[in-house]
Length: 253
Ligand SMILES: [Fe+2]
Image 1 (cartoon, rainbow, N blue to C red):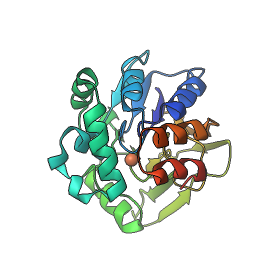
Image 2: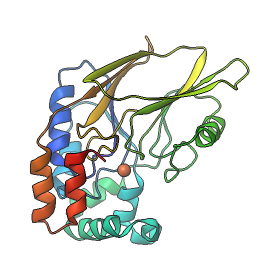
Image 3: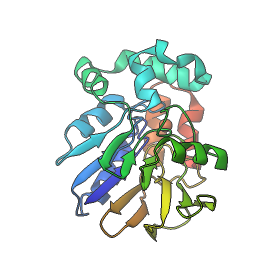
C-alpha cells in the first residue's frame, strides 16, 4: 500500500494547498493525516473544508489543538498564551459543519495495517512529545506489535529506529536539509517516524514537509515543498492573531 502522510496543518491553507498539489501527482491508496488541522493559523475553515473535499480515502487522527478548539476544558491550560489565544479565536470562527466534521475525527492511534500505526503525539497519548530517547523507548513499548509508527506533534521531521534483536540499539536521525529524502526501512528494525509539519515547520526550514510511504517496499520519501509563507503570515496578522505566529512561518522555527 502507498500512503501520503502529512501532519500539523495548523490552519495554514497556503501550505496545505501547496502540499496537496505536490502530492496529487503521487500514486496513493490513502491520505493519512496525523492531526492538528487547526490552531495557530488563520484559515481553519478553509483547511477543514479542503480536508473534507480530499479525493480518495482519508485516514485522519485528531491532534491536541483540534481537541482543545472543540473543547477548551480538555487542556487549554497547558497551552502557551499565543496558542490559547489562537484556540479561542478558532473556536469562535469555526463554522458548525466544520466543527462537526472535526469532532468526528478519532483520537489515535489508528492502524493502517496490522504493524503500521498513525498517531498525533505518541501512540500511548496524543499530547506526549517524542523528543528524547526515553520518550522513544516508551512509545515503542506502548505498541509492541508495531513495525512503523508515524507521529506528528513536534513539527520536526525525524526518525527513531530500534533493532529488534536485543532491542537496545536505538538510533535517532533528523530528516531535513534536502528537497527530498529517501529511506528504505528494514524489517529487522522498528521505527518511529515524524514526516514533519505542513503548516508550521520548526526545524529551521520554513518549507512544509510531507511523506510518501510504500509499505510493501518499506520505502519512505520525505518532500519539502515551497509555498508563499508571507501570504500565510499576512493572513495571521490581518486576523489579529499574535505576530509571532506569522513570523515563525517565515523563519521555520
Ligand atoms: Fe501541532
